[in-house]
Image (cartoon, rainbow, N blue to C red):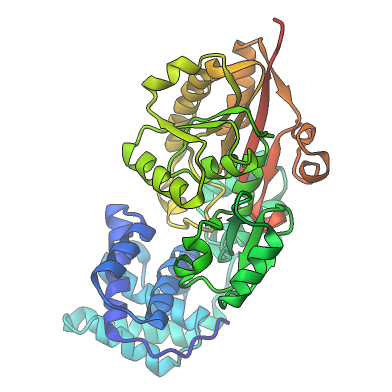
Length: 453
């Protein structure tokens, strides 16, 4: 049971209700909505923390919450108005996962539905039933119906659980993965190798009030205990670190980028991996960062200035043509379904469909084919996704190799045997998993261009 003794003002419940309605009906992203809300309205630190916990907690545990509502009362989820349903979900989450009195929860339920006397009575009765019966709710039998149990208790859509069972071939592993997806991820930062070392950054942050520990696998990472205000620290202002999940750090290291080389970051986005590539190269050589979004490239340039990453050059896709067959390394962080980052984006598991994956796979096939032309003979292309989906990972790589005989698969351990032996699967691919490594779920494939073909 998560402890929380903070008095929550009614305005927070109204905000949470609005956020949930927007996420479920308009399919808007919670992080963007919450960011906009915090810029427009004033909340205390405790209020922000509670608001974020309620929104993300409900999204993570939605299947379990709805099961409790249906089995603790006569309510049927499909028949309840979205606004009323989300009010009940808030109260149910509080009753199961937060340390709030039954009287307090019931008062919140009444307040949230005060404008509709008829529905207000329904909400009150339903929440009373949840509070009365929540500890007696029966879930599916874990042994006799393991898939049903995982779907409900660990709150994942049935088609995703079925898909992972087919691909992972272990119901125990699927259960562990789904359980791990519902755990709040740590805040992990990556030091700037040009401006600091890990020990110095660790002590500097501790002096600024941020307790931290070293990441288990990446030699460049720290796990920060307190999140609030991290971007206001002197260390951040001086470009000593960036926020980057440990898995993301590791797949960037898969490139084996070295000082003096030419590296192309094909889908650079806001530049987290470009900045790390620059650091790995000690600011020597060139990182070419390309993305379809000019706004993201502008943000990358601002971040590069703060980090002192002076060897990064941002270019449009059209301007990449001059680098045909010239790159020592090409990193493709392909747009994907994000099935490896459900713990950070729990809303996406409720919006995603198999058709989305199929469409993304078609786009990924185009991207890897397009950017392969920039790899010079003897160079490497590293294809990366943050998803756990065969169609977007192995199928893309084997399909590409079948059509491009001048490329060959390179095992991940060839870059760093000690480090990547912990992550390499039987086919030589890199794979980090939330339930095994406590990182986001990443896939990485290294493909080498033959020197003579």
